[in-house]
Length: 232
Image 1 (cartoon, one colour):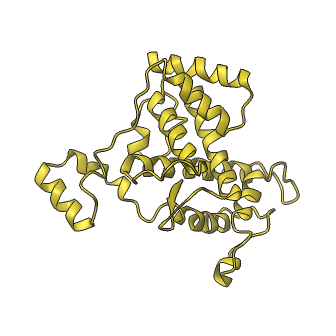
Image 2 (cartoon, rainbow, N blue to C red):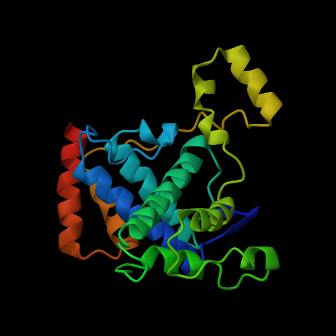
């Protein structure tokens, strides 16, 4: 489970469809650029971006497993796992933008997966103000989709405290004072991402394969690539 809108629950099928798109794209970016030189997996979320490839894959697996497993207790929210959620959401948004960019003319819509997924996440919406924001699935105005995306994002993230990673580099007195002012728990920045060994990466990739509905052979390719990333 995960904490969404102050409630511990699993994601709905429609919510997960959006996050799953973000997960698949982000995972591919990490595996395609194991040295990080091309910056494919940089999501503009400092606390996530600075993790090693192995750490990124591991925390993505743990986070998404919790989001979809009713038997998993909702973990305490920390900077690193909220930063991971922010990266997943940004990855989904990036894919939606690519989808729109691939429409060469108003009548050309080769892909609709992201737009349909985001609309489906609001299929039970009753708030009239929100309903007014719902675009047609063929809409290609990024601003209209971004307004809806921001509403979706707000289900997962109440604030951007995870961006205050600079607190870690401040003096102890400054960090304590700033956290008190902002109402941040003392251990919010203390928790760290898992750092799996090469052997443990087998389990990480099993989780990712299950979450992404990947066949066994693709899981093994992912395993080989990710172990290379660890060695590097």
